[in-house]
Image (cartoon, rainbow, N blue to C red; front, side):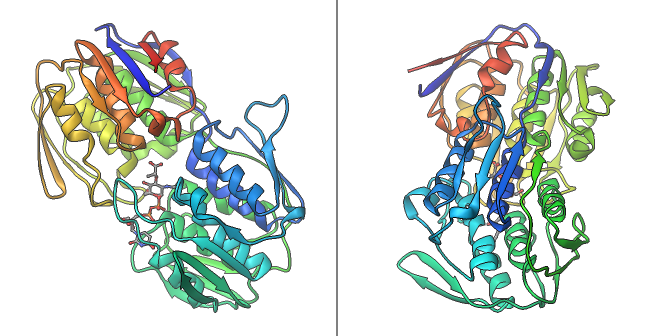
Length: 419
Ligand code: EPZ
């Protein structure tokens, strides 16, 4: 099934929808399972393509990994059988986050050979900061025909990242938790996915302080035990569903999410005219006044998330007035713009800034998904467009959204898969 057809019915989305577990958190936790001495169980994991790819990566290392029969969102990962330390190109190229196995393999087995992830549609996405962390910890690194080879005995150290990197911080944490001595890491990422990884590592017996701040201190321990862990709700999926509620002027309650993780997203949407009722594990969104244009610049957490940039832009295309959206994190994350222009959006891009002028209406069109969040933004735009929008290459969205069309159908959207 390669495309999703959305019929902008003009009617508002209403009702309640539960988000799946965080895709990005789950990927890091699956890599961290390599540090445990037995079977790790991860509950509330989303059944999305990226998780399937990570299952294959773990299996290729010799671990037993897969979904638990009868528990639709629980994973079992048993690393007692790990007997080889190479993550192959054909899997890593499908999902860059596969590179997260390097830190745990190096920490537990003293060796790893992982294909360089390479860039993707949204940017070059180098891994120099990951390598810097491993080198600072004492690993011998070499580049061999597109693979990063790492080996050696690690020892505690101090270093600072040159820029904030989520997976870089996570990879370094996983390399340091079994490393003798104290490791002090500065300029770390503060994302909830970093904090959730630290929470599972601490449950496994790791000694980590400062997670959630830019200053993380880790004291190495002898070994880590495998645990059961529950993934939190996906904050980006929650933001995406809230954007769908906003653009259709609906009344949607998104459940299974800690609203505290949505701080800057809700703040910006409130500025645009959204009304939120916030409870412990859910957020209800309605629209009071007409949506107005707002300006935003993406930034590392707690700033406005780059993963919500395209979805907010979709809402802004129909807002009253103008907005300026600056993408500071990735160098090429405006590929949804030409597709939205095909739908009648008035957007002009100059460098890292997109200037959006609200229009009366969008017209449904054939559009092309280019990356995970761009494809979600085109579905959001299609919900409010006049007529049919066909989003092609929808495998992008299946990487990170579980049953998205079903969730939207349950809110009243007219949406179907085809092809
Ligand atoms: C994580 O990617 C997420 N992916 C991304 O989500 C998210 O957009 C990104 O963090 C930023 O929040 C996963 O967690 C699997 P970075 P990551 O390293 O860690 C540069 C999605 O849609 N950089 O924080 O790879 C990099 O090029 C995906 O779910 C270096 O230069 O992102 C980028 O410009 C997309 N050298 C910036 O830092 C490095 O060694 C931030 O990237 C590492 C990063």
